[in-house]
Amino acid sequence: MENEHFDAVVVGSGFGGSVATYRLAEAGMRVCLLERGQAYPPDAYPRTPKAMQGALWDPSAGGYGMFDLWSFDGLEALVASALGGGSIIYANVLLRKDEHWFVNEDPHGTGHTPWPVSRADLDPHYDAVEAMMNVQRYPTEHAPYDQTPKTNAFHAAADQLGLDWSRPPLAVTFANEGEDPALGEPIEERWPNLHGRTRTTCRLCAECDVGCNYGSKNTLDFNYLSAAQHEGADIRTLHEVRTLAPQTGGGYRIRYVQHDLEREGDSFDTRSLPLQTMTADRLILSAGTLGSTFLLLKNRSAFPNLSNALGTRFCGNGDLLGFVLNARENGTHRMLDPNYGPVITSTIRVGDALDGGDATGRGFYIQDAGYPAFMSWIVEASNVFGSLRRFIRFLRHTLLARIQGDTNLSAELQHLLGGDLSASAMPLLGMGRDRPNGVFELQDNGRLNTNWAMQGSKDYFDRLKRTMEALADAMGGDFVVNPTWLLKRVITVHPLGGCPMGRTASEGVVDAHGEAFGHPDLYVADGSILPGPVGPNPSLTIAALADRIADRILAEPSGA
Ligand SMILES: Cc1cc2nc3c(=O)[nH]c(=O)nc-3n(C[C@H](O)[C@H](O)[C@H](O)COP(=O)(O)OP(=O)(O)OC[C@H]3O[C@@H](n4cnc5c(N)ncnc54)[C@H](O)[C@@H]3O)c2cc1C
View 1 (spheres, protein in one colour):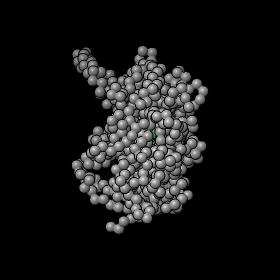
View 2: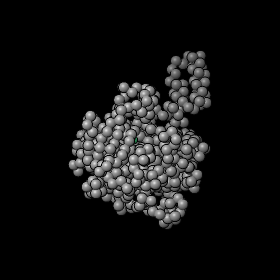
View 3: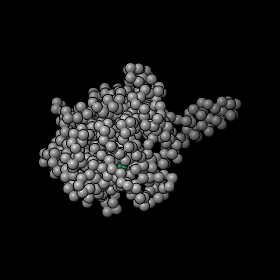
View 4: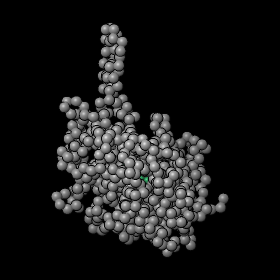
């Protein structure tokens, strides 16, 4: 087959890739988007244990699913593989990076400035992305949203501790424009979505992180990608990019494999898949922090001018997961009901020395979280002693009822089911300004690894954990930190860095407009270009940067 050629090829369809694809297609460029994962229309998300088994991404083991879990030396990282990237499994929070947090952040104190952009540079792009993603705040001014237990408990705990609580913008449709919020109403869309399906407003089922089967989340497939397709972009799923190289005379050669689920089956050496080739005047890498860094490290020999900063400035955006357990009020369990609401409804912001005033230390955010109802069954079942105690009580009472001639067992069954443990719990999600001092490299076996270690940001993590403990206490509960903490490890869902922006090639891999130093027309537009933590959830900043990068691409002819 003859090689295909495009004005621009975009690799990966997350926040960076979707924005770039739309903006370039809208401007009339011939754009091809290559995404390794699958498309997920409403109702396609897995729910049963068997279906969840297939929800992981590892094609050589028959996994073509949306979760991609990595384990590095000092932390675990969860990312997505799907049309729409992380938006498919994310918790919808779209917060701007704090103005004073765009700063010097050199781990060795030599004082260079890795953030080559400011809040003022990004504000117009934040505006554009928020409008496109139709952000809405959790509508607590209306019933039944005002009765969300975890939101109210979290808010009250914040007030008790004097912490700054607010409802962040969420990419979720609670209400159609000009209407009051309502559960399960058909969503009026601005353009037909690429799945050709009807979406409905949020039903508060807390399933955001396992994919929304109602299409209530404003994920990238429903906005940027649907609009890009409408503008003529060629969007291809199950296309995994393997190699990249500059071409003599300009432009780039991209080699990829096309997955075929039926042919590959449960166990298949995907290295044997035939490589196909396409070329482009401009190449935009948006395969995510792990994906883009991996691709550039793997293909480094083809890019002799790439900066030595490749692989540097990695961090997990200060992520720390904790749990409130056994919340109690007036001697009984306090219902936090983590299964009710979107996964995140509200946030606490704790200031940073950079903010001026009384604040000290490195700033962070803590958000209330939830999880789907099926997780509550798992929580109850995993309480082996509690379940056994209830089962023995059930047998005893059933026997007694038989002896006494009571033929109704409803009350006994009611007690057997339990429920207090899972209903009086809720996760807390912390994130903020940890130190971006991790370096990625390829191991001898060709796998990606990073030397990032929690100890490098110990003060930050200790302060964040203490605030979580105080919040749990204020809710009448115990606090349990994610168990990997004991092994000095964290779990991040916000990996950042690896191809950092900088003012010069000694500082970064790409410039402040995402273009690689030494390789014109090669752009990186995703979380890998962040030279340090965002602080709050990073997707809006990634998308805003991609929007700014698109401006630059459109302003410059290729080869300039
Ligand atoms: C459970 C969870 C909850 C989260 N909640 C929030 C939240 O509330 N707010 C927030 O701001 N962030 C949240 N995040 C983080 C957010 O998802 C990421 O920060 C964001 O998606 C990163 O965007 P990106 O463009 O860098 O990459 P991604 O969105 O990760 O997209 C990269 C894409 O590239 C594709 N790809 C990778 N390699 C290749 C290849 N070789 N060939 C072709 N395609 C490839 C991947 O399949 C993926 O689709 C959450 C993440 C998780 C896991």
